[in-house]
Image (tube, rainbow, N blue to C red; front, side, top):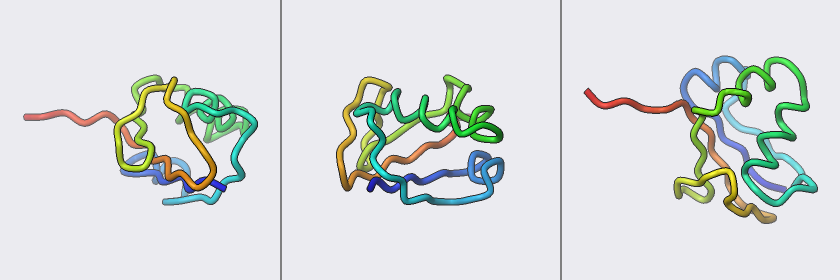
Length: 82
């Protein structure tokens, strides 16, 4: 299992703050995004946005970052400074 966390408007659109998810057959953040998109709406709308950021075990991660059993993967919208 991996722990998925969703923040800000992602949490609102998906209707949940976290989800325990069986480790998918893919081993990267990008593969996980694709698996979540395949769940249909509202998942496909949220994760089709390439600006959604990811962190694996509290470290910023790109789509090619590896994920493993027991990891925590957080998704959140892009942040802006002001």
